[in-house]
Image (cartoon, rainbow, N blue to C red):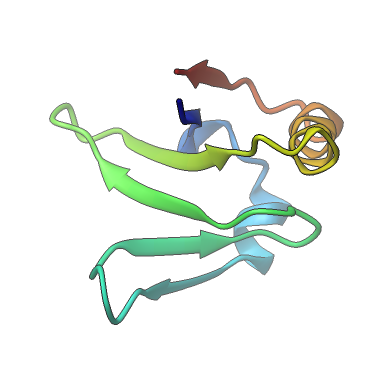
Length: 83
């Protein structure tokens, strides 16, 4: 079973947005965003009500999963995990 963590772009601090890098994956054509210090890249998705959501794979590895959760909590970013 795989899981994903979701955050709202509006909840990301401005300092992280300013230093982020974004690109379009050449294979999947997904819009990808990378934040300084974040162990994972996220996929940007515009929802039907014009909100922007970022989806991160939620790692099975306890070490990597812990690093992602610690990073989100450090920045005070609310997240939801869906399995």
